[in-house]
Each structure stands twice: as C-alpha cells, then as structure tokens.
Image (cartoon, rainbow, N blue to C red):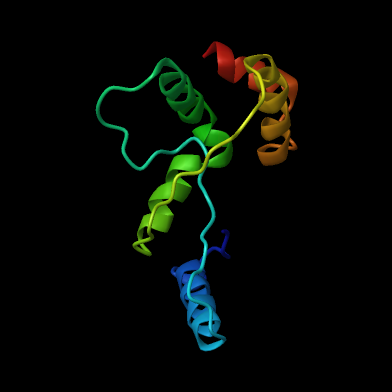
Length: 120
C-alpha cells in the first residue's frame, strides 16, 4: 500500500472501494480484506498467556510489517470481523510455524534483526 510522494493521497482507499464496487456488479456478495495477523479487534479484558505473547510479538514486529496499522487502515471500510485460527497438531510445532510465518511476512528480514527485536 504505497503511493508516490505528492501523489493522490487516498489512492489505496479509492482502489479498494472501486474494486469492491466492481465485484458487487459481478455478483459478489462478500469481499475479503484478508486478515491482519498479530492485531486484534478487541484487545481489552483478560487475555490468555498466548494472547499476551502474541500481543508483545505484534508490538515488536510493528515497525517491520505494520500489522496493527494495517488493521486500523482496514477499519475504515467497516468490515465484519471473523475470527481466524491457526490449527496445529502439537505445541512442539509452534517454533517451526513461527519461523515459517515470519519468513512469509518478513522474507527480507535478517535473523540478526529478528533476534535484536526479540531482545528489545
């Protein structure tokens, strides 16, 4: 979601809205803006240990990817939020899943930079 400096400021919003209108004309009933991992709609109240860990991870990775700013951007479109879940067979798989997801979202980030963020 980048635009040229000095360009039409709300270009991304315009493109998304235009695409949604075109999809509706083609008969689409639903358009997905996809998820914003590590950003939650309701961050209030009691949270489980894993939720607190994921919140901390999201805060540390925000400068690299912008999960929370992406979530805030999508809120402009008044989406209907649907939970998304990652299903895994065993907790022992979580480290590998974490590495795979990190590489999917931050493919150019070095291991050194990730370790530096984890220590911060």
